[in-house]
Amino acid sequence: MVPIWAGCSSEAVYEPPTPIPTLSAVSNQEVENYSKAVLAIEQRRQTAAKDILETTELQTVPDINCTQSETIEVLEGTVQEIAVQYCNDSKKVIEDTEDLTIDLFNSISSTAQFDQNLQVRIQNELIRLQQ
Image (cartoon, rainbow, N blue to C red; front, side):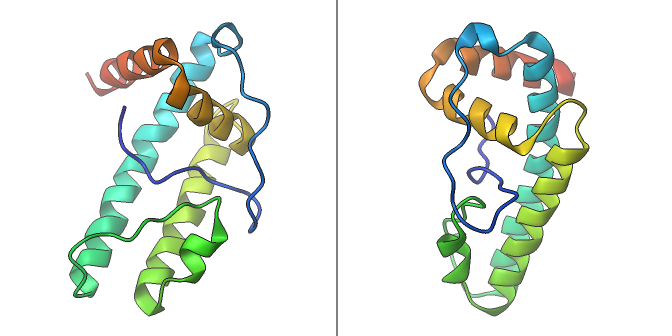
């Protein structure tokens, strides 16, 4: 699966995602919409990571989880600004993706961590979308 910083949240505090859907509950259309959002977010993630490394003396990008505000609050200055912008941009991508909500995006992300069949479906859709 395309690596991304974990989750997006419409809230500043962490809340567990909606109950994890079963494989049969994630429709092909939801996989397609999710994959479209992942590709758009991945572009932003790469840009944010590049910006963080170029504007600091850091050798690696800090762990950033948009659903866990403490991972952003510990960052300083420009790095925090870049992380906040990335999370806001990611949230907007999800909200602007047809028939996709932040809760559904996070639920699919959570499910995919443990459901190999869903991972394969998402990977196949990502490949299809990039052709």
